[in-house]
Image (cartoon, rainbow, N blue to C red; front, side, top):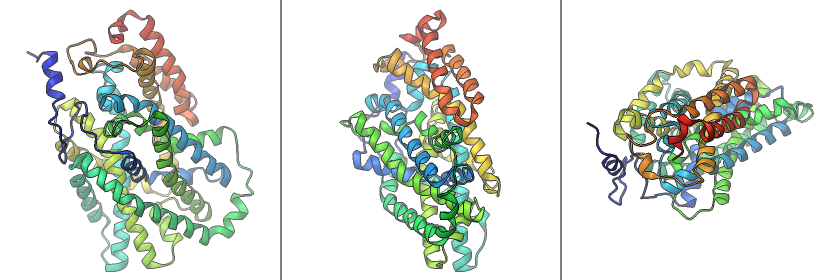
Length: 452
């Protein structure tokens, strides 16, 4: 016999007014721990996605330097707007993504958006852990003569698992402290790249005609696509931000925290790949820096950056999914997610041809993430008019029980549209998915109970 709706809601929403390390739950967040500055730095430190190097490499030969720079900037500002829009429910009500999705997909149906969000996170977790381990291994081999990448990968992964268990209190301080070091490192890497390859690059990258058509807009989506996962579960983070920040300011915080790192990393990958044909980030650093002490320092910074990115962006989302589906504690779920990252075989993703493979990976998962994003936005702003009934969201036997077929059908429609225009899959999916969801919710009888 199941518990009553009120008992379920009360149990999941219990809060003692404080928040200890690792004390994370799916309950509405009453204790907000991040102010504006802290929230900005968390996003800044958490957005050092090494995949951005590969995305920069993947547009070599298609865009010139100006086009690549604008593509990155446009992608980042679209990200900022999308994060502010979809994060509004979490910010207002303190609910995580898996709870937010219940009104649109149903209690059972949330497993679809949860799975779609979790899989890319685990893959990126493994990929970035391998990159971080490679940086540590290069430092070790150069300074101490000890060269064992597998050892460093396993050790590095368990270090991240240990940090992840601390939850948002640990994440807050890790991101805030690490942000300045990360920015300094990336600025230096950009400077070193220009100094070393500037002459040969100026002749090709600036004079190359490039394209302002579909390849350009496809490039904006590639840099956007790296963060399209976070657009989906942004409520997991916005629920930690203290109230009192207008949506316009939140948009600015998101966009301006993501832009610097994405711009530096994308252009470094772009320029070095153009000059050397190298897409592996570790080899990029080795090629760009002649001074051994500076190279060692840079590699250590990059290894640290993988930690800040993984614990924020690639641990929290699948952890909350496991907590929701299997009803397990946060600490246990973070350990499971960390172990799953081993199974992604990340060493396969840093092969010489990996840039093209990662480009396809981003385009493909963006085709699934875009429709779900559109459905959540339409559900919150159009169907609910920014008003949620929290009790119903925590009542497994209430109107949101089961699966909302409207969301599943709309997701399928959006995926078809996205795959039909794979270069801009995320963009292409939004209107078909959003309109389909609205029409089904408005006029299809089987979905009426989800409109409550």
